[in-house]
Image (cartoon, rainbow, N blue to C red; front, top):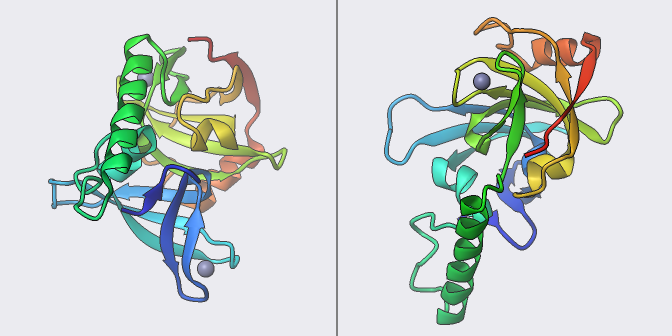
Length: 202
Ligand SMILES: [Zn+2]
Ligand SMILES: [Zn+2]
């Protein structure tokens, strides 16, 4: 289990420091590995505290379900105490209730469809610091229409489930499927694009 709900951090290996803990907003690139369908595994490049980028692996469940307290298969290992299992069950119930009430754990603004959409982190594929520095540029492949949108959001919008920014920046551009193949191309786009503010009212 590499995701810790209390700190909302993922644990990865750093060649300098051994274990390091990073929030989702420190991920830079996510790529679903071909094959190995069950469970799906994503290769992640993350920006480490040491200043370098390192690769890591996360399962689909760790990416999309663990932040919600939903079972990731290995969260009910025997080493867990009964109390922790209860707590996890409560958290999962809470997440299910909120989703059932129409709250979205994560959302983005789909530019081609001109509407906000619910999304899970596995649909994020490039992230980079935007300007101003507190923001994150986020490339999302829309689960509904398959098109790519680039949003400018807060770190909390990415890191904290059910924290949706009231308004976000949207690049007014329809991207070709392979336009944002590299993080370099993405950063160039982020810093040259103009963002239009859109409300993410749900
Ligand atoms: Zn490092
Ligand atoms: Zn869409």
